[in-house]
Length: 255
Image 1: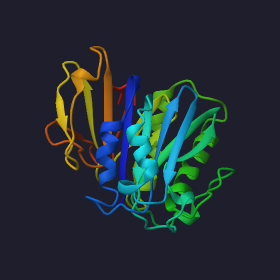
Image 2: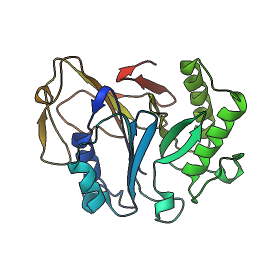
Image 3: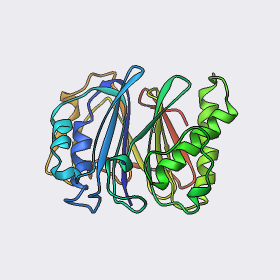
Image 4: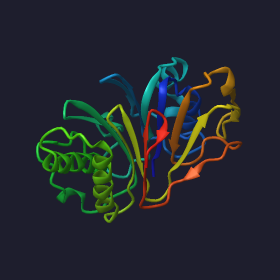
């Protein structure tokens, strides 16, 4: 299985602390050594860094870890390959355009019968079940909303129904974002935490790193982080019930 990491914030925020914990699991404290990737949103644009090498010793991961890119929406993934070879084209997150926005997606799990999923003009580039499921999901959205929708919470509720269908094919833990919203759908394991004033200290489980968020934030900051497993041991993480989803906008939980 792979591991996921996402962030939603009300101000541009770096994810260096959480990312430092995640990449240790990519071959050092965990078996997810078959590549990693991260997507940062900046307005309508996004920048993605990927590497099919293990994240814990990837020079590109060190660049991201040490370069505090600030964003309001981030999706990241470390891979343990089960469908498709270890290659850049099979490395998450995957990104496609829909309604004039970049949609980014990362998946943890394994699906059966995914070859039969109709994808329309959203064609997979690699060989993974994950990317094909993403293309199918976007195709279903395009069929239901031929014009850009206005009721965005309703759109994500529909996405959750689509995710329910994919979950029937196997394990389907997912992070999805269009740069404004960050959605987490749980099939087996996903946790989230929202940090807001009064901020405290936190220590990573996978690396000897501690941070005092009070020194790094302003009183009005709100930052939510989603992960496959909690990244810190001295904070309270909330587990998403399997079959349910959580939606964040500007760091605040909407659903």
